[in-house]
Length: 516
Image (cartoon, rainbow, N blue to C red; front, top):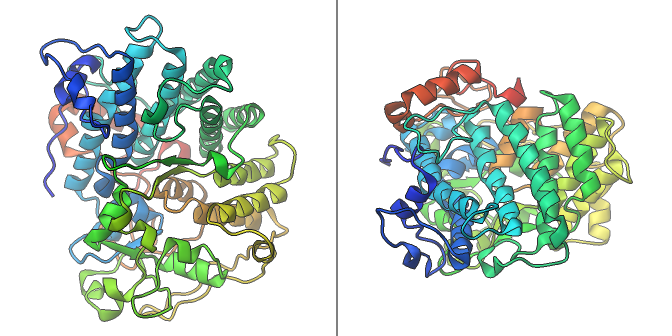
């Protein structure tokens, strides 16, 4: 895959809007592209279409080279079966990462900055509610990027400067917190209403109350992420988020609704036969007799058996019959290409908030009425319900003492862990339980799963069978992705500012700020 260098992050936002034409997932967005030599102002219709473009592009742009080939493999939701693809062996494939970076900054960022610039106070289409929601989505967009690279271009993107300095990750996170708080505060007068975004808001259709809960849940997620780096900040932000109101019900789950103009990129990618169920997922889901397994994955063709494979197989090992695509579990039918225009794309489950509250309670934070155990068990029940499982079967699952299983594969894979579902008595095992169940519940959000694995070390994922990265051996952990060639070629001073703020070598072994 050959990716173009990124040369766009220094351009003013309105020039960016004109330059890229904002070819949205909505049919009429490109009609807004007028004289490309002048700054572009957006009316309410243009703002709505730009917001739709920002939502879709931030997920679809380079999904394969950003999520599927890195986070989904590092989180061990999936394992690679494409013989010539080395990222599952910890190789940081530069052209893929360059394409992921470029797709974000040149395609997804222009429309969101256009919405913000036009709807801000005093803007051509000033709208405080839309401005607040767009700021919430901006945080959602930037989070996985800073969690890949650490310091990145953030505050000065679209400023018009020729060289863009990178923001330190702690600065970015603190701005995330401030942005989410202000957005929620600014939305308070609009509670109980639906803003003018309508169907162009492909997640909540402009429902203000749901956006408030989503923003608070993001704030809670971020608080746990920084809990080891800044405990006081984490506690304050988490407690404020819960007090303001987080996601609690599957009715508020955040999914991007797909259309004939905005497909589900995961469903699209399954046609390429690049990934299958991981051994980690097989060990846990089979061991727990987890009914969600059949909703996530499909049996091996011609059988009733679910089978995964280890991450990091060599090209020779991937050539063995037992590791072929056809010998391992693909995704469930609803994630196949036939459903790319109908299966919505996960952004955030309400179940995640329950698990975050469970961890917060173990930290001694005020997470509302309940205990770490009750929050943990409610997280499981909420996740199960999102897949259609309730009642006695879920009751039995919550109190089960069954354990992950060893696998009868070519490398004699042991059980992933000795942790059951039933709530344990020691804090360390409780933390492992919370993270393991959150890992299952967040499927297939590989970004979040990988970030939380780096932060907590849970679930206890398998070592790579092979690593082709001298900085990260088979029993090591990829802590970040290196900066990309396009930036080094066009914004070298900016990249160096990022390396300086990273506080370590620009490689896959250097820990991020929140992971020190």
